[in-house]
Image 1 (tube, rainbow, N blue to C red):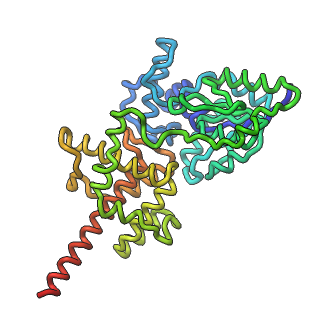
Image 2: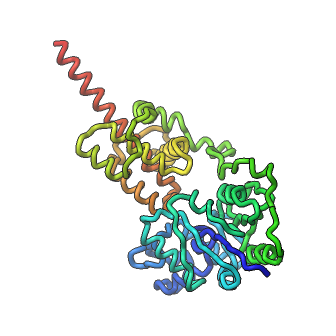
Image 3: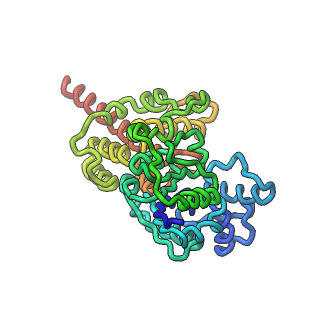
Amino acid sequence: MRRLRVLSDFDNTIVDILPEWCFELRCAGFADCRPEHIKVYSMATNPCLAGVTETVLMDTLRGVHYVWEHNEMPTHVTTPWIAGVTEHLPKLVAEHDFTFVSCQPVDAKRQTANKQRRLRFIVPNAVVNYHADAKQRLDMDADVFIDDRADSVWEWCRKHPAGLGLLMAAPYNTEAKLPSNGQRVTNWAEVAESIADLASVSDKPVLLSPAEMAVPAPPMLDLYPEDAAARKQIPLYSGGIKYFPDAWRYVGEDLENAAARPFDHILADYARTNNHNYLVEAWHCLVDLHTEGEDGLKRDAARVSYLGNQQHNPGQPLHWARGKSMDQLDAAARHEAEYRAGKRFDKAGYPVIGQAGWRVLAELQLRLEATKGEQSSNKVEGDK
């Protein structure tokens, strides 16, 4: 049996969603891990949960108890469920050369340190290879690549036609198509079986055809959902263009220095000068952070408009309740930092980077309106 080189993703494939969290939670002081018995969620007092959102924690615990009680996977759990990792991974690491890779932001030190701690609970000597850029990880050579992102598995398979890509099943990749050297696996028992099959082959087979190598990787998700009701909840015109007509047009202008600096530095310059061009630069900074670029950020900002209207103006037509929350850039800075730390959605379902973009648009819209008012007032004074 050959000893293989294996690249395994870190987030959502091994460490994030585990029944073994119950053990860690008990160590943190939760004697009973049922969701209804957890009264306080605090990363400060429970360091093993650093980097874990409350929604993910509760979904995990519901899933744990559903599986224990019904011996099947609940349909309402939306996060990946990784079964059998503690049983199979230590043996696999002993038999093959594993490298654990992650594209978690390198500045999220507390979050990544705690994820490493969870991994070491399973594999004591595990070392995680961090990359800020996903491209670096996809360029790494190996015999096997394991990930939960269909687009990453496809791209790695295309770059390494003699390798085997394993897609860890998750709700967001159920429809994904894979090349001939890619396989879908639903748990770590299947991962172990696939690796054993490949290791038993004496020569490395060329699994990907030349025609498949020429096919670009498919997008992981469509920009907009197919479901009609879900599409109605992304009001791009009424919740985006019409909400912020001046700002929406203004952010489309190509500024030479856009997205060249950190977000907080840009806001510092805006605070110093009140120059709205810095808000456009802040928008482009968020565009660069977003995995789907400007279209994705605009979509998420429109979704925030819809959710905000449901929260602040229930039963009313979609409109911007301007007096409800005016701390635009405090919120924008907070949401941008949360997104860089790995948080994607808050407990109410708001897309975090969409919240940051929405706040930047709101501040820019208000600034442009104020500028218009000042110009109009000056014109009237000049005509007298």
